[in-house]
Length: 216
Image 1 (cartoon, helix red, strand yellow):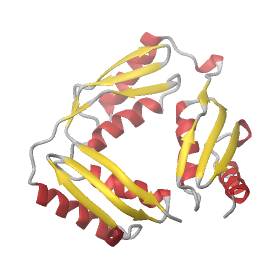
Image 2 (cartoon, rainbow, N blue to C red; image 1 turned 90 degrees about the vertical axis):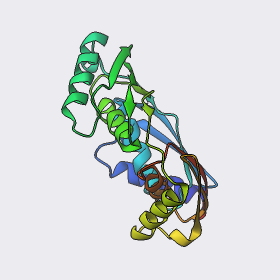
Image 3 (cartoon, one colour; image 1 turned 120 degrees about the horizontal axis):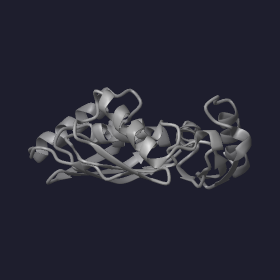
């Protein structure tokens, strides 16, 4: 696929995604790298633009340069927004108790302790989805119980083999003191993200180093 074809395909995907205002987004493509520029009305829309782009075959990497500029009716006082964030975090069963949030000019900073990466991701998602948030800084610390390196590696490989979207034989997994290193070749950005998620979802993982190569 040529750069022009990839750009056009991404533009079409954005246009057909109702969660994104495609008219506000300029797309550039070069050698599998897609760059998104423009202005969107919410952090959630910014993230949805990345998700839509990642779905397109031929995309190896996404550089999201979109700026979030809130409409006047969506702007909120920092104290009011902090209260809304804390309330939303408390009501979500996947977010650990004790996660705190501070807000400055619409930028939310999350702090606290989580056991699993998916708990950090969920707290980040909950905050990002609220009206008035323009950015989320996730400073939640990840603390997990020590695990045997061979067991961690085995669990990750098993998870990959169960996933129909992955060719687990093309991915190498190395583990050391909670750090997982993934290397090898995947066939799409979506497959890449699935492999990373499989590693993060495994008990005992504190860090994931991504050396995967996307080869369409």
